[in-house]
Image 1: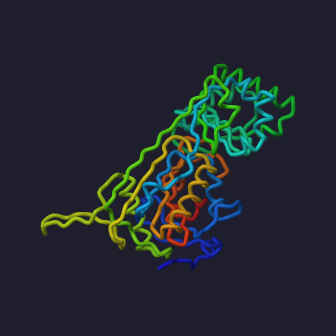
Image 2: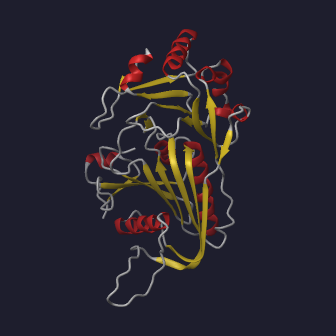
Image 3: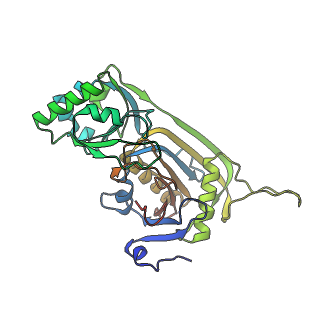
Length: 353
């Protein structure tokens, strides 16, 4: 049932392309088979192009699911003045291993209406500015690619902090002080606590985790096949879990109808779910995938990771953020007992990761 007949599809090495009728704005569900999170792997190459995630849910099946240890990410808030942001100690620390996996973003700002500032682990500062701010900024950027009615004159600026000359640093600092004179609130995410940020008076550790468990539930059976019906059923089952719906098969009278995902399930077991909400970095997500893969391999049970991309980030897919219609910055990762997984990405062929 897999259609790999066109030249474009054949170029996508290791990808299975499946009809995705559940996503109204897309034509395909692209599923990549992978077993490694190392640099250069399929998973790292795809997820590495998206620096910011808004939420992640982990679904584990098996009697040990509730007690399984998972890597916790560090989610925090800090307040920085632009002088601190571009200070010599900060720039020097940003090129150190401690900050090599940290991302920062100004929270609660809309990508189509407000000024958004972000720093990614490559030590690059990304600015998405309104027309008024850009005209006062004084640093040349690129016209925004955002295409939505009512959005005019936005510009995007990207600047590597490790490659700043003294003159370029002075110009950038002057522009930021002129347009954004007050302290800036950032939300950040790191794999471990960062001493540079923890020493700041404004540092506050944030933790938004929701944990749920069901000691008697039927987990789906998954053998790793990229079959259209199987993947659709698994996606529906994961969606029902994420929406907090009852997935139990319930008997009903003939006049009543009940909905159940179209996938085979195994015997009753324990299912545990944990959802992190806030800001998640690429490094945090990769650590979690490795943990869940180890759990699936050890318990021989089904597992899944659901990822939601951050809509209001100035950067997505290694370029300026655009308006997504089909959920192509969200992912479902399905694990089977060998520890391998399928990374499912809804999107048409002209918007792949």
